[in-house]
Image (cartoon, rainbow, N blue to C red; front, top):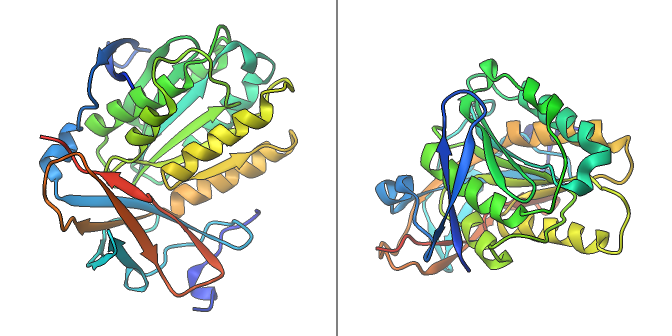
Length: 313
């Protein structure tokens, strides 16, 4: 992966809610255990309109600049639905960074900071950013703030300690995101070595939150920690989360990869598209619905939510 492709050049369990406390200063957070997954307020008011964040990669896994929406054909439960495009290239994005600060990241803390700063500084004009941090707890350290005025200096003093509640961090970040994001173009970047050993949430809970209608495009940025027997499993977990949410996994192979991968992540976010459609089944029954997005270009790959769950009453 090394460049952005211009389309015109191609041939055709328990659930957790994050409650933010505080203002613009680094905020603390309280975890509230919920017995059922709550439908986000935005989803309750927008249903049955559904926004899909989409990113297209070429055969070299380079992001492709926006494909005309007329070239896409969307199928919901096997039936084609009309679609429209909502976000132009370089339109503002709401983005969440979910940063692993558990003990296993200690030796590589500076790389996490570098990636966040590089991506945040390259966001389209008008974008907004939020940041959650996790070790054996989840903390909202930056509520949604205009990216142009976000003070990221606190990243330089983040500590690494304790166990990892990565699953809880994704669940709580998704919930906060869905309630407070302003833009249709959305991304969530999880920066972690993939270790998970202390969450209340199970993997299935995480997958369901990643599959709410209108969920952000998930990017899993794998920064390897000290080699261990669990390393391959941790990387698989990150890839599973990316696939379930219709996103992309960026995996560090060697230290020199970091800058290249951060640049590609920025390009993917910039090239993201938002397609909107109206669900054929308007029932608020919590059922899942399959999604398939097609176009006639065999050398390109679409990353989009494979299914979504309707809101429950």
